[in-house]
Amino acid sequence: MRRGLFVGLVTLDLIYLTADLPQPNQKLVALDYTMAAGGPATNAAVAFRHLGNQATVLGIVGNHPMRQMVVEDLRQQQVAIADLAPTHPDPLPTSSILVTQSTGERAVISLNAVKTQARASQIPPHVLAEIDVVLIDGHQMEVGGAIAVQAREQGIPVVVDGGSWKPNFAQVLSHVDYAICSANFYPPSCRTSQDVLDYLIDLGIPQIAITHGENPIQYHTKTGAGEIAVPAISAIDTSGAGDIFHGAFCHYMLQDGFVAALRQAAQVSAQACQSFGTRRWMQS
Image (cartoon, rainbow, N blue to C red; front, side):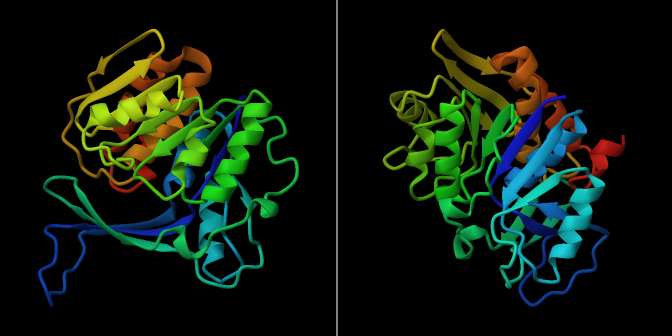
């Protein structure tokens, strides 16, 4: 059994299934709803654990009463928590997610970790002990940078989830082995996917991929480049699809290599998109 450390954002996600998005000053009754711990690193950890591994989330949970809902959800998923600020009194960031029934597309309003940034000094001791892979989502930048350096020194592969560009991301990217970015990830001065690839290549990252939703995944390695087709599906809910992709990638990368892991992670993500919410796909 492999062990993964997932560094970044912990949220409480409220997910609603709706016929349409609300208009100004309109109230809608949801068709369905669910609630779960969320955030890119957190959802990736859940997927990694579901595929038969041990997972720990390194992020801020704190001691506000809301924490119990997140702690209980992750306990049910058998995902451990390494809390960067266990006495933090403020509420966890909450995401409200509206999923349109006819398309599976989601609209999100949330507060990320901008107001709750931890320092590297808050990293628990020995957090990398017996860890086989690290994923960093960029929401705890100083902590992510410190963990990336330590992992590189210990020979632990580091994966970055590049969902969107964030200040000081370069200090993390300089120490990673795998950069898996979305089509919305644009470093400074980058305008196209090729610009992004060139930027990441210049940083010395050996294995890079850019996902494009239902379109093929671009990838680049030191020995070649290409595209990987993703499964054609009728999506029910795309919430957390990228996060689940990253968790699955970490699982398959440890046993099958880069390109094969991208292909298999796309299969898992496609499966997740065919269920409502970020947990029900694991029950099918």
